[in-house]
Length: 168
Figure 1 (cartoon, rainbow, N blue to C red):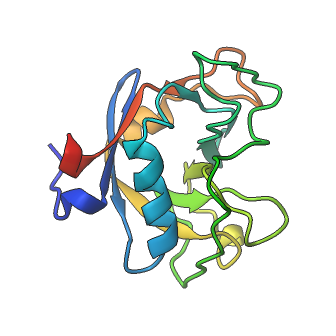
Figure 2: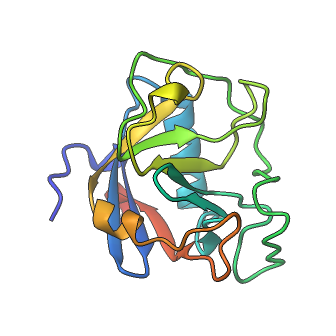
Figure 3: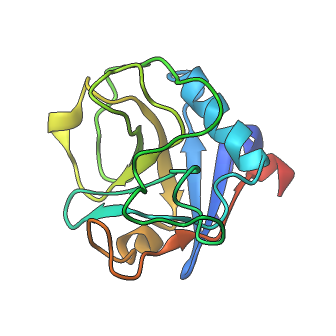
């Protein structure tokens, strides 16, 4: 069981192989953390596919508009959508994109993050200072490592459920 220090800033993602526990860094990127909690509490991330999974790089998910496996799922469109909320401005920091960190996915515009995020499989220093880091996996990285690869994967894995630990 993960050592959860702050349940209000801890996310529990249920994957096919088990739970991934993410510690959010609200002191570093408060807007991104708040968005993730808002969407988790609304159930928006439930059943959303990992639509871009690159071995040795990262697993991307969180397209709540196109990635839900139970409603209007379109893997070809996954990665192009967000939520009904406005985009979140960049909250760059000196935190590195190391293995297990959570980064905000976005378009070429640094202030275009919305609902999508990625989990780094390895240390990806080339992303440092260009994408917001706002969390880290504290338990269950082996379940992240088991996510089906592909752009998009033939049979994409999904986030079965996403909850804030304080609500679980």
